[in-house]
Length: 223
Image (cartoon, rainbow, N blue to C red; front, side, top):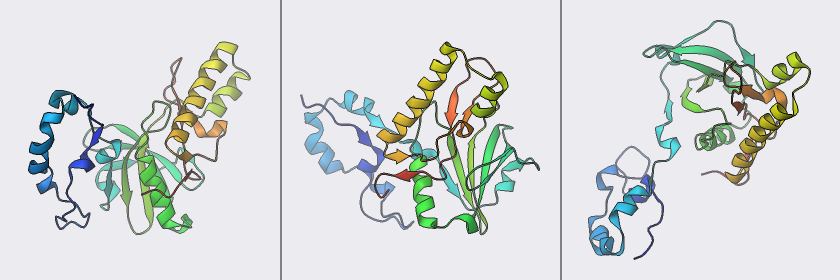
């Protein structure tokens, strides 16, 4: 029996436009004729188990007012290469997020910037900051991200002056794991430093998270 390949939602989208401009029609998601012709070649249960939902399918890009959905603290908690970061609470759930505000006039290449945002939507790794939503208005782009309450790795090391060999090995392993994952996904961070790693919590053995992809680039033009 032929081994089924990995399948994505995109594989079941027809090329006929449904009117929303994306060029694909969910109403014709399954080509029934093709399915009937080929179903005998596959183990259907195994095929279903290989069906993949990409992370970017669940990250929305909104043009509504972000203040309708989030309460932002007045004082920033940090500044990155191209933006200011605020602690915020999601109004409906109370969940704490970090929202990075990037001014449009600071974006030299808008298309390139949005291509990198699109690339970041695909990243899903325990040692990389998670992107949940994107908002955009006439002045700013807002990246709704995971909130890391443990602070910067730089400050963590400075407060202790040094790390034990065991702790340094644990931290370094997580750093290299995040970098390797980015490179496997054709993304180069280009701004690696202790300031751009956060600790997920204030607890011992907190996860190390790579942040601030403002200078990142894809190895090839991202589509």
